[in-house]
Structures are given as C-alpha cells and as structure tokens.
Length: 102
Image (cartoon, rainbow, N blue to C red):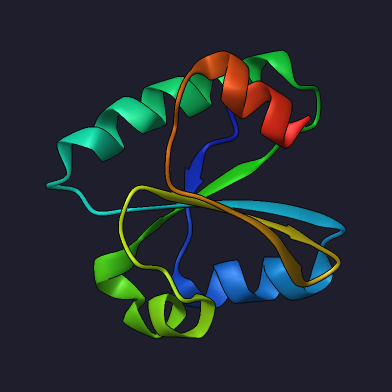
C-alpha cells in the first residue's frame, strides 16, 4: 500500500520531532520536475518495507523552507530522530533514491 500522503506544516513538524525516521518530499504543484520525482518516489516506496514518505506543498509552509534551508524544489529531506541527515535535490534515478533511502 502506498503511504505517500500530503502533510501540513504542523503534521510534518510533529512527525519529524517524534518519529525515528521521517522522509519529507517537498514540492510545489506547478513544478513539472516535482511530478516526475513523485512518480519515482512512489516506485521506491513500494520496494522499501515500512517506508513512509510525507509530501509537503512548500506554498503552505514557507517557514519550513527557511528553517531547513530549502533552496529549490523538488527536495527530499531525510530526518533521523529529529535531525536532518540528508537533503536531496537531484533525483537521478529510482535506483539512486532507493540507495539513499534504504
């Protein structure tokens, strides 16, 4: 079952602070590259058991862009125990994303 879900800024912040591992996909609806990246992430999510990816429309949470230094979209943020561990802008391939998120 696909767990890619839209989160609000408050939901994202709560999960980042309370979950062992949180993956947050930051996008904007008018970004064509973001649409392709979402398809790639959907494939990756199907191959990694228990991976939950939250989606956040940056238009509704500009404070998070400032807080985490997001420079462009699409952006994938990987948190472990509330700490930002990875910030990925280049979604090279499904294989690359699988390796980064495994």
